[in-house]
Image (cartoon, rainbow, N blue to C red):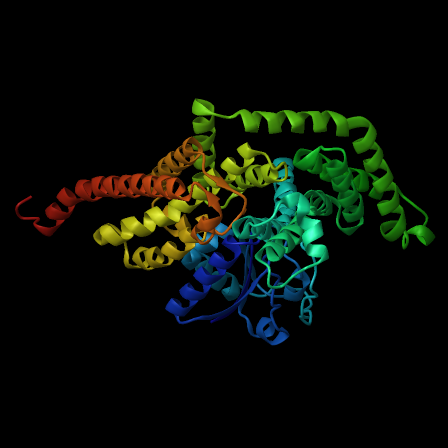
Length: 489
């Protein structure tokens, strides 16, 4: 049979593409064909009209509203969360085949059209309030990540090159010398700093966009910029984004004459939203949030001893708990938000978060290598890929293992990540780059101790997985012996 599918996760990074790969592999194993459109952070290659017309059924593996849904009018559709495609793709195909076998509904068939490239709000129409708030925040984070990666890595490279004083960077680049190491260091620092200045406005703008669509982007960006100007930082950006989205949502509910409807989303909503959010941030809530941000910065700088170790352990637990899900992203966003303050404590937190996030895939890659018999052939194959995923700080590489055996895998990797996070904080490792994994070790403060923390947590997690899986296999051995020798039983 022929199928088409769309995969989309809240942040549009890893789960979107892992679900697509799982569907493609399962279709190949079943002798079916499938074409998948991944609506992820890298954009999407729209399904062709011919692929949609030829499909027997459609699979939506998505945790948010599917863009271009109208293209599939008249086709049998099966919907499920994105993790269902990763964990049970075979079940989705069974449902799709059953839907295709049902008599077609009495509705006019629509000519499918290619999807127009568009922004995605990452929020479903029928989500509960708690889910909506989480998705609004995750939308902001998903659009923020490219700026984080570009700006953070460039700043980290500038520090690795060294050879200049930050205060002198404008003077150095004003008379740029391509043969000077200091010149390149200064240039990388200035470019990265400019990219980093967009972090809070982008976060606020796309939180607002997720809430109230395009008319809320301008109020959100302006609110985020005000937050930076008054020192409210990352926390202020979160609040400004929520305010901007809420204000524009409220304005949309006001009925206006038909003649004015055309200018409302282009002029009126952005104008009034920007005024209201700007006043709220400058006059009402901005200063208290700035005071709270200053207090948080001082607290981060004062972390030492037991408090730092406990915070590292907590962040490690969060990074491993759902492997790229909302809890993982909350810990990562906390670390990235700290980078905007430039405090020494925030650099330690970033190092702890990245090290802890690398542990789950590395530990399972190690466990599936040293004790192959405890893992299936598919898991051993995933283990080979997990080496690179873990080294690249892609925690989602552990998902296939956790999906197959959650009660043994998840506690094990949480323990290992907690150990790594705690040790990283205890060792005082620092990191200015928000991503990169093993490839940015030269940019890490105390790199050898950082690697010691990473190896220790990986060994703890891998050992825990092996021990727990051995308990399962040993408990299964007597039953297997009885079934193999019924006469002796």
